[in-house]
Image (cartoon, rainbow over all chains, first blue to last red):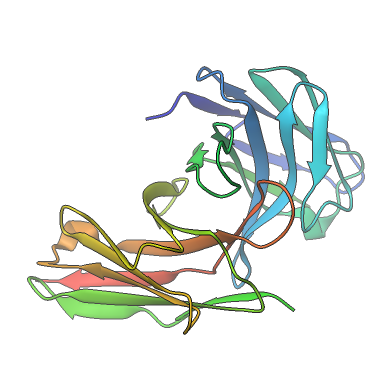
Length: 117
Length: 112
């Protein structure tokens, strides 16, 4: 398995509180991603990073921010959590695309189950 | 708008048969298409990648086809086993950058 660790694995918090999820990799891959997975919607990209301090928005970025100060760590922050952000969050990593985007597999962590009451 | 569609209904088959899962997409011409497996409570695991100029790709009991005219990929598991029971996701690049978009997945159940 790729060396990806997500923390915490489970979290319950209240609406309006800030929440930070951490993704740590030991593979030295350049690209890192945050997804959320919800029934009926599948995996949806929140933000991704293509290098230290280089990030871009995904499909569902509203209400989320990210930071990447080191190659191995990618943080996802919910500044003020809402019940609609209750979900399972996955981090993924991949090597650089090389000859074209989409030609590298992504390797996923086992997710963080976040409940916002 | 761009869409990736997989059968939302679970596919139930008998052990030893070939399972065929479908991924259809619209309004895009991806250069690559990927397939993943996801078990309950776990993250997706990469299985196969196929390029637009490859009609077919195989890995052990797995076979993927990619028809860019029909805008469809088929994923086959031959000699299926109960251990193949999982949700299978297709994914492709649908915009700028290295951003994958995933289908919602098809759940496969292989029964004894």
